[in-house]
Amino acid sequence: MRDDDRSRINYKKLAGLSSLGLMLPSSIAVGLFIGYYLDKLLGTRPWLLVLFFLFGTASGFYSLIRGLKKYLDKDKDM
Image (tube, rainbow, N blue to C red; front, side):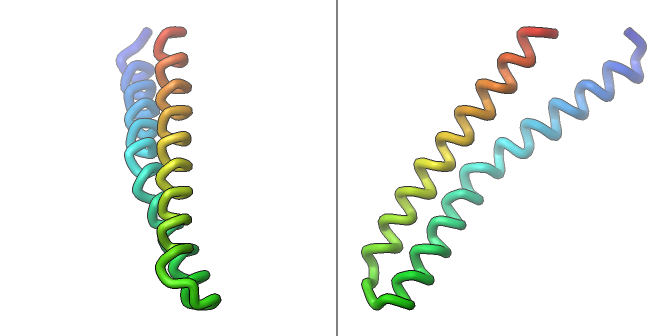
C-alpha cells in the first residue's frame, strides 16, 4: 500500500471519529430546543424541556454507541 493510500484512510477515520464527537451534544441541543419551544407554546414549563432533554440524551448515546460499533467493526476488517 502506498503512503498516499494510507493517508487517505487516516483522513477518513479522522472524519468519522470527529463526527462521533458531535453526535451527543447536537442530539442534546435538538432535544432542548424542541422541549423549550413546546413548553413555551403549551405553557407546560419545565416538563417538556426535561422530557426532551432526556430523549435527546438517550438518542445521542444510542447514536454514539452505534457509530463506535460501526467504526470498530470497520477497524477489524483492515
